[in-house]
Image (cartoon, rainbow, N blue to C red):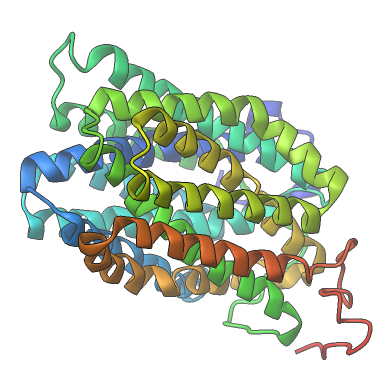
Length: 410
C-alpha cells in the first residue's frame, strides 16, 4: 500500500485503483467541502457576523495567505510524498469546513477560514503537479476537461441538496457544513489506504526554482490570480448584497453554472487540444473583459437581476478555459520542474490575492462598478500576454520571441 509503484506498472491495476481514477476521486472530493463553504459563505457572514464589503475583503485576504505561501510545499515534499500531502490537505480542508459554523464571529471566521485555506491551497498546488506528471501531454487537455466535469458534478450534487432540502428540512449552516466537510475528509482518508503510492518516471526537483524561460507563464499566473480574486470575492457578494439572494437561490445559480461546466468541460478540453493554448486563452480573456465591463454596467445603468445571473454563468464558463494555462506549462516544462514550479506559480498567482480583496473592499464601499472595471483592465492585460504564446509551445519555444532571443536554461 505504501510501497512506491511506478506509473508504468499501474496500468495492470483495476481501473478504479489507477492514478487517473485517484485524480477523479480527489476532483470530486474537494468541491464537496470547498464549494459548499463558498455557496453558504456570503449568507453566513452577513447573517451571523453582519459583514460589509470591507469585512468580506479582509476575509478573502486572510483566505489567500496560504496560497501566497504555497511555495512552502517544496519544503514539505522533501519529507512527504506529493500524493500523501494532497490527501492530508483534503482532510484538513474537510475538517475545518465541518466546524465553520461553530465560530460565528469575525475572529472565529478568520481563524477557521485560515485552516481550511491551508488545506485547500496545499491540495490545489500538489494536485496540479500530480495532474501534469500523471497525464500524457497528448491527452492532458481532454482529461483536464473531464476532471473539471467530475468536480462540477460533485459540486452539483451538493448544491442540489441545499436547494431541495434547505427550506423543507429547515437546514442550518452548521448541519450543512458538518455533512459536506465530513464527507470530504472521509473520502480523502479512505483514498489514503485504498490507493498505492504512485511514482512518476521523472524525480522532482525539491528546491525552489525560477527559470527565465518560464517568465510568460509566471506573468499569466499573476494576472490570473488578480483577476479571479475580484470575481470570487465580489461577484457572489454582489448577488446577496445588491439583489438579496437567499442561500437556496445562490445555490441554484451555482447549480446552473455547474451543469454548464459538466456539459462543456470535456468540450473545452477538446477545444484547447484542437485550437491550442494561445487561441483558447485569448478567447477567454476577450470574453472576461466584456463580462466584467457588463458587471460594472449593473451598477452604472441599473440593469436587473436576470442580467446579473446570466453574466455570472457566462463568467464561470470563461474561467473554465484556464485549463489551457496548465497544458501550456506542461508543454514547455522540464518534467523534473513540475512540482517546484507548481508551488512557485501558486505563490505568484496569490501575490495580488493577499492585498487586492482588502483594498478593493474599501473601493467597493465607494464604487462597486469600479471594482469590476478594474477586473476588465486586468483581463485586457492578460489578453496581451496570451498573444505572446506560440502556436506550438515547447522547450526552447516558450514565447513568440524565443526563436529571436533564445532564453537560457536557467
